[in-house]
Length: 210
Image (cartoon, rainbow, N blue to C red):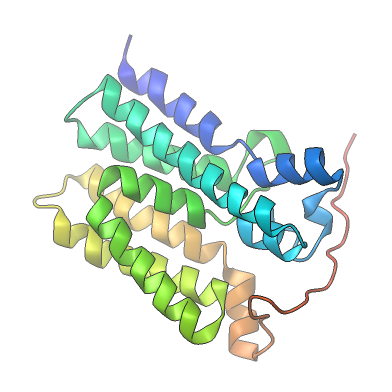
């Protein structure tokens, strides 16, 4: 069987597992989309008062994306194009999950997971950027945006003669993460963005369609 036909749908489905939503639903019997920013990611889960679930969400979101790339590398060892395509599919799955009406998270943890699988030195470099910015500002959003923006710099520094697919993936994933932070960017520019640890308003309940 063509490994592309097998691994890309699997990568998307793995990426689309909404761990933040599921953990809060089963442990606290709440809808995380009705809390804080309404996002299903680790930061909003932690801000909802469930720091342990937030850490677990982070690890699971990272792990599912890491696994998606590793599966692609298993079925086609040495084929970097397939691994990068699986990385894109996994992050797209997280941001646009089939199970939640294509309304998912911002892709930060999943992006880190695929970068760790694709090129761990560059992933650790962007994690360093994230930590420095976060410790200096306490803005998770700003740290995520600048960390994502730095990935092409580190990624291409560690990859020689990248193919068009690798170039596409190394640019598309950070751009997608940054675009998903458009509301945060507006609040940062307006000076109204919440720092991590500060309280946040309850989000409007998600629309339910029948």
